[in-house]
Image 1 (cartoon, rainbow, N blue to C red):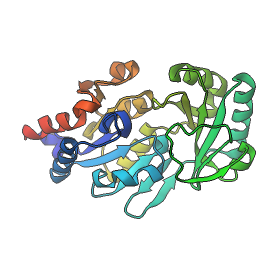
Image 2: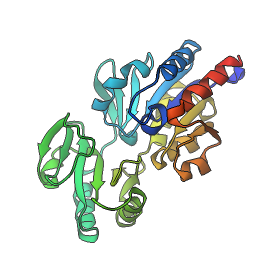
Image 3: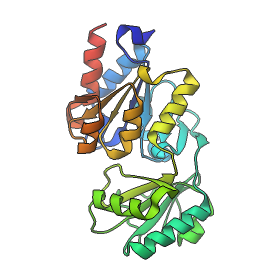
Length: 270
């Protein structure tokens, strides 16, 4: 087995801020390192907060299996089939209750929902990415829950992301999973208990892969459940302090191809 050679059977990596450089690209070095890993029998799995429709541009680095874990664990997506093969969605009634409480206690917040149907938002919700793909409706949340979401996006125009995360968490409590992937002024809500860690653990169990056979890479707090589940975890140099504190190892920053550097060193030793 690969684990006997010191290599993992699975490499699970976050995308933005980890595998991707700050300009959103995947370097040639990283592409080559991932290809070498796959050739050595290592399965590379992308585990991301991104929605499925944003994964097509990364298809060539997703590995031969073509499976990615999206939406912080809400969606398992098959790139080759271009379809969601499994999902974990929020109860629309819970969504309405949580949104009402957040509106009441955190004035100024606006909302968007990510569902199997695609992206939907309130009129005042700013799409800071500048993208408009996948948007199927603009309207009140009461209409948007026609399709149960896998993720709610909560935006505030002025609060720092850590502050927003803490305030949203205090209101939501255990009704949903609150995380942030580093997007400015944005907190993310998923079904209670659904995380990158749950999605990765479930997928690995289905493949007969144990936690100790997995290496995970990440940069932000939404990566923590995945990093703490994996047998070995790497915080990239640009990672959030909480990620540095939790990971078993560190590697260079995303702009210095930290994932690629780590894989190159591991592969050179076998």
